[in-house]
Image 1 (spheres, helix red, strand yellow):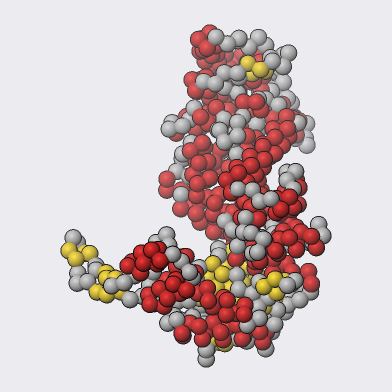
Image 2 (spheres, rainbow, N blue to C red):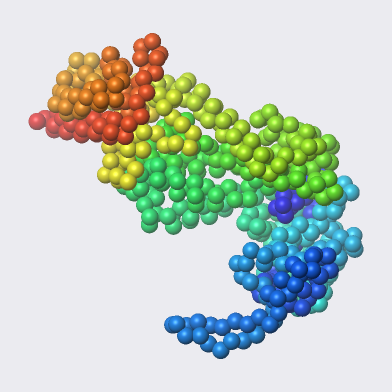
Length: 556
């Protein structure tokens, strides 16, 4: 929510042509210096139930710690400050500890106001952020924060605290020399770039630095290379995709649900994600985007950001009508135009693309799980439907049986490789054929600027397309026939109708036994054994073809 407030403040300042001063305050070892006696007094003043207060009082009274080293314990010592690192309650206890500071600033009337709503101190645990449109007011806010830190026995670090100055123009002329703020008797660091809750901001821009986010995500990706996340000679694509969804994708989109992303931001994120998925599947850069996602049962990164953005709006609508963020949502949706850079107008445009009415949701808030389940299902269905429709219209994907692809499920090409890394290379060869990226003579003739003979370099009897390569070429019969016999036997075992034409056989081999008949009837076969045999057919033909073509070129 704090990132959302900052994003909205930046957008409001740029739209109104106003200045915005931002200060991030760094509390040195914040969780370690919470005074227990002050914390217990503040908890008591919150009006919590007595039995809960007594429980917390017992946890933080007469605390002691000891060091264990090589199975032996050192002498115990008393602990009179700090909340437990990693404890579930610790962030909430720290919020209680600093909440009176935020109230003190609001009561003093210091900080940014949007309309009649106070937005001067968006804070998450120990990440205190100060917003103001006045230089003098910002210094007054810093002074109050400094006095509060002295009263509550913790230190604000002036070297790690930062200030930034946002103006309407994107053309920066440097930080104005008169914009200097001090924390106590020391000057706060002035900066053009700062990081807040994992988002890298640049003064003068209304969106975070996406290139920096991609760079950080790449480091996460490189860290996973040791476990095999590095293409066809590592983990199989299905397992690799699970690792990406578990570690890489969350790093890529973390926090982006709270900011307004431009089309160029989405383009950069999508390009990185697509290239990663192509590399994991061993597919060339020219592969159709639809195939990249369909073979892994994945959806574009833009869809995941939309899911999280709608989820954040759900959190806002459940805050209640008395909350300032809820009031801000109502204000911005009613007063801002569609061209506004407001986050609330941005999320409204997203919702409209999925036929979701946010105004009615504000009037009658949905339960958390219902909202999350509904928005996730709607967004996924929308993007998966679009991918399948587009794939059917792609000439390069004419062999891909779209009905054989399922959301969140990897294609049979990759399923048969699970736990069998030696099968990945043959599966990649088949995947290139399925996606229209396997280079044959007919393809060379079609796309080469110079005249190229499309005839098969082995037999010369016909144009070398996929049907000729997989089914007809007489010089590849030895590599083909035994495997086709295995497939015919499997059709008998599975009690499925065998392909009756060369085209049907070609589609069956590429789709793992599943094919569409001439009358458009679908014959489905879901068998790992089918896919493994199909992979071996494609690999055997590929090797035999290369050997014989090279022999011809060498004049043997």
